[in-house]
Amino acid sequence: MMIDDFTDEQIRRYSRHILLQEVGGIGQQKLLSSKVLCIGAGGLGSPIIQYLAAAGVGTIGIVDDDIVDLSNLQRQVIHGGNVDRPKVESAKEFVQKLNPYVNVITYNHRINPENILEIIEDYDIIVDGSDNFSTRFLVNDACVLAKKPLSHGSIFRFEGQVTTILPHDGPCYRCLFEHAPPAGMVPSCQEAGVIGVLPGIIGVIQATEVVKYLLGIGELLTGRMIYYDALYMSFDEIKIRKNPTCPVCGENPKITSIKEENYQDSCACSIE
Image (cartoon, rainbow, N blue to C red; front, side, top):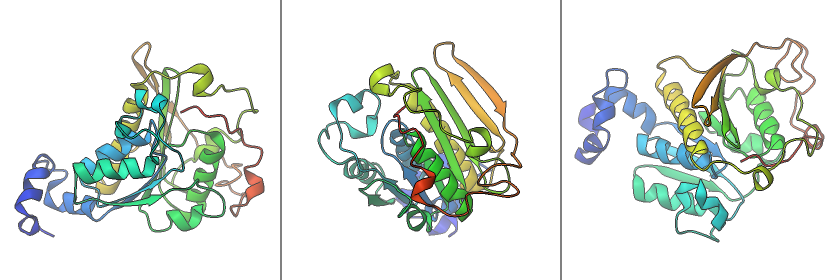
């Protein structure tokens, strides 16, 4: 599709993208033809979904089995006015109002070892906005095995971190954290709290990485992790090296398939 193939409304909607030499009409068409899966429609998922939809990503899949609670609205800004509704329905409604050119596919159930490979199969990149270690390890392992790019983000109190994983071209999540911390070591957000604006910052960085990957521009956070401290307004970069003994992407991987027993011992404490 060339610029002449866009409708007048699309040209106006995406004009600031089209003006960018790094994007242009060809780049915007790449976004419109892309498929992104967002795992989680909570604190991180809210800005991720909002900005990917605004950017014109053609298909956005949303996985979440939760219901909107009043306590979510302090940070999950996509769900205003939708308390007690499924988060996937609430998020889809927001996207449809924001950008009718975006196709939203909803999965109103929890991601698990039985369904994850089938769900991620048709997507170009996966965005992990989950709130527990078990899901993070599961998503990482599935993406490595399926060779799917992955944007990882997580938050806790006033701190957040982001990295981009390109399976077999750089380190994965297990190269940095081989195992989850013991259950009970990391308090949940119900116990420790989280500043409401934090997931907006981390989620927008994740969305930026996704757009850059889809357009093939810039330098991704592969082999690097951005660590953000909101209290001190500081950003630090941590180098991540590929671990040759990593159990999923190492030279002799122990995890060669997705099985339930690989995640039963993972700490499931929420930190969203």
